[in-house]
Image 1: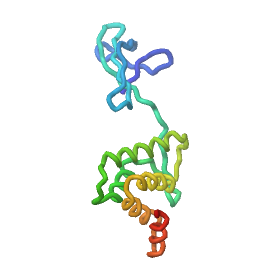
Image 2: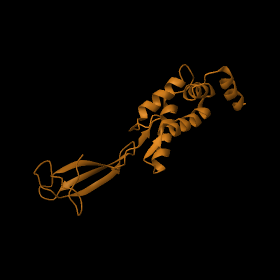
Image 3: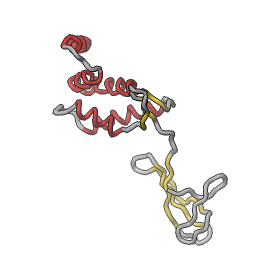
Image 4: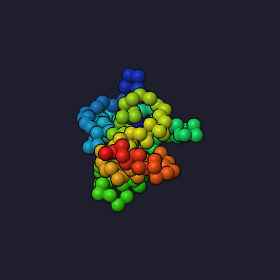
Length: 159
């Protein structure tokens, strides 16, 4: 992705003649809404080209139980939810929406380091609304139930 030179902007040269100034002739969001598509016209040769603008975000960092840190990985979260929902009547679309909502909630909190425990709690809340069997599967792995009594206590809390 390139930036076009305007006051205070980085330089981007026209792909046709190399000139570093252009004007926006059309601007609209992309279908997914995450980017802005801009049609530009070079002020020297009048060549037209497209640029895409995205919001620059600070990456979300997950603090693991062992205090190590790694970038948030939405695919990893989705895979955990898929595993919990194995052989359950839950569509991938529902789970992708849940992951997007969790990610948005984390990003909107303006906290850039979040514990894996907090992410798991958000995932459990979503699963509880989506499918109770998947919720129990997820909770039993996450909370590391070691006895039948712990498992039964969780089941009783649902009723």
